[in-house]
Structure formats: structure tokens, C-alpha cells
Image 1 (cartoon, rainbow, N blue to C red):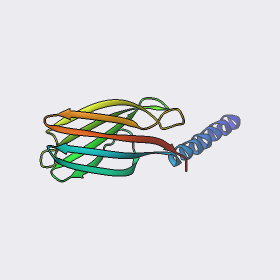
Image 2 (image 1 turned 90 degrees about the horizontal axis):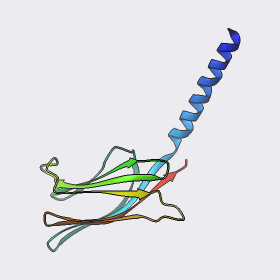
Image 3 (image 1 turned 90 degrees about the vertical axis):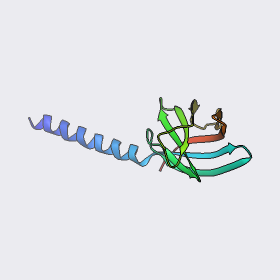
Length: 132
């Protein structure tokens, strides 16, 4: 009985340590985005911490641009880019999905280009794993 408790306590401590180490690591996205409507061009260069499944939302005057990143495995992700009117964010005007890899020596930023409903959305995103 005492031996079982020791094993259980050791297991609980190991899980707590592993959880705290994993929580210290994070993903970071560096991106450049261009939205063109006719001759009007909006450009954004920024970076943000990433929580997979939670969109990065960027306000661009009358539009809202969202970048949604879903991890596929330890080095691959799916990026969904969507553009909607700021006044009606559920009315998506432009949407595209792209497969990317974490930035490493063998892979650079993911570049994308969309042209839908008279709007052009293009850019690049570099997603990396940051150790803290």
C-alpha cells in the first residue's frame, strides 16, 4: 500500500513537472498581410503569440482579417485566412486554407495569395516554436 502511494505520488509529480515545462513553451507568428480593394492597399506587419485554434484578429478600417492556426503535428499546421466586413464579421468575403510548416533551416515562411469578391489578400507568415 505504501509502495503504491509512492508510485502514485511520483507519477503526479512527474505529470506536474511535464505540464509546467510544456506551458512555458509557446508558438509565435510573424506576419505581413496585404489587403487590396481596387487601388486601396492596407498593409500590416506584426507578430503575435499563437494559441492553436484561437484566431489572430486584425482590424483594417472597414474589414477584419482573421488568421486561424491549427496544429497538425509537431512541425505542420493549417492556416485559415478570412476577411469580413468589420460591421458584419460573420459575412466572410475572402477565405482560404493553406498547409504550412514551422520555420526551420529547411522551410521558410508560408506565402499565400487570395483573390475573391474583388478583394486581394496576400502575405506571408512564419510560425515558430519559442522555448522559454
